[in-house]
Length: 171
Image (tube, rainbow, N blue to C red; front, side, top):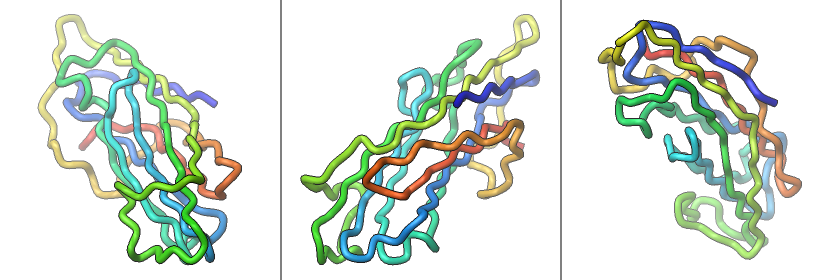
């Protein structure tokens, strides 16, 4: 799946998008660790990670990522946003409360998450430069979706299904 988003003048300095992981099952005996990287034209825009354990279905994980951050104020006229993730399935009996989502690893590993891409087109008035907007992300859930959110594909090892909400300019 691919979604297209057009950002129109005035151009923001930041373009926040909300990414979320929701699990379709709990990881009772073997917790998992998921690490997600959000790439904008193959440059790291941001990342987040989580331990998926006994309450994975109830405890979603979400993060706001500035899609323009990798471009340091020089956003191209068009760029692709993609989500890449790694999933580590821990051994039986692993205490999920002692896992560090940033550093835990396991022999059961998969580049689990390959998601839909978002094409961001930047429309500019002639000679227009990005305007300053707040650097802090808006509160979770405040991003107005401009198109139907794409859904990330799920790894065969996990029922974790991250989704990406198309970006909206910061208020």
